[in-house]
Image 1 (cartoon, one colour):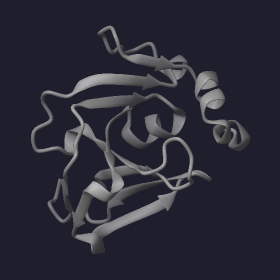
Image 2 (tube, rainbow, N blue to C red; image 1 turned 60 degrees about the vertical axis):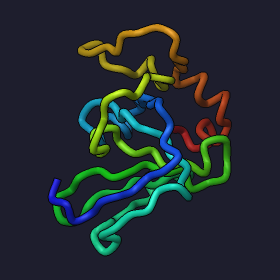
Image 3 (cartoon, rainbow, N blue to C red; image 1 turned 30 degrees about the vertical axis):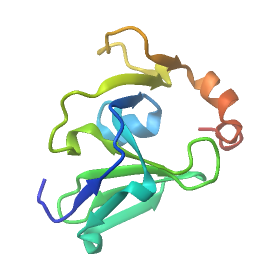
Image 4 (tube, helix red, strand yellow; image 1 turned 60 degrees about the horizontal axis):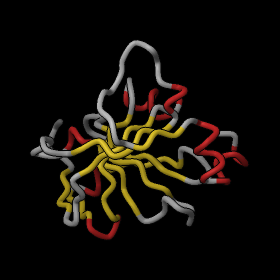
Length: 140
C-alpha cells in the first residue's frame, strides 16, 4: 500500500491457488489467493522494510513494516511445496488473467463465500495432511 516494498517476478504462472486454512484466514481476513512463483525468480526492493515470522515449523509469512501489507507466504522446509513464494494476487500490478488452479483446506472454508468454477483441484485438510505428511506431524 505504501510503496516502501516492491517486487519484480519472472516465470509467473498464469494460475493461482486459494488456501482456507486457519492461519491464512486470519492473516488475510478471508482466504489467501496466491500466485506461486519460484522463489529464485522474485526480487524484492525495500528489503529493510520487510519483516518475516516463522509462522509454523515449515513456513514463514512476511509483511511490510511500514504499512502492514502482507507480502508473501513461503515454505522454508524442504518438502513438496519448497522453492516457491506465494504472493497474494492483489499485489500484482495487473491481477487480471490468472486462472484458478487449486483450492486447499476446502472443508475449513466459511460458508459465507464461495469460489465458482470447475476444473481446479480441491483438497480437504485431511488430504493436505496425507499429501504433505509434515503438516500432520505439526498439527496444522
